[in-house]
Picture 1 (cartoon, rainbow, N blue to C red):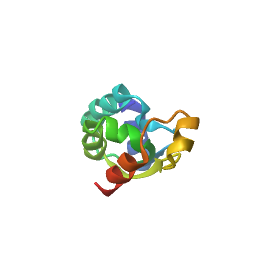
Picture 2: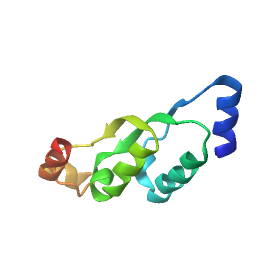
Picture 3: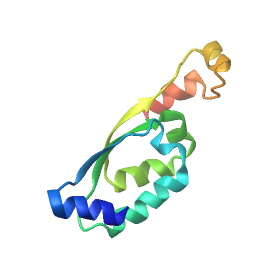
Length: 104
């Protein structure tokens, strides 16, 4: 990844990206690896990506890592705040917790 990002920077001056993955933050290891890549780059990476709000809530340290690695925007994945609908689609994140998290 370091080589790929560096090549795009050197050839085209690219520093901003949009990571296309419907759940970029689904894997904590991926986020921690991004931090290692970011620290080796010869430029300041900036990116937008999709994040699941429930996982940002579950792993709050990833919020800081993502910001420090250059995340400048996100599209939040929130399926529902309706308690019964959440049970039907097997989403344990409660509507109350979800709304409280968004306010934070």
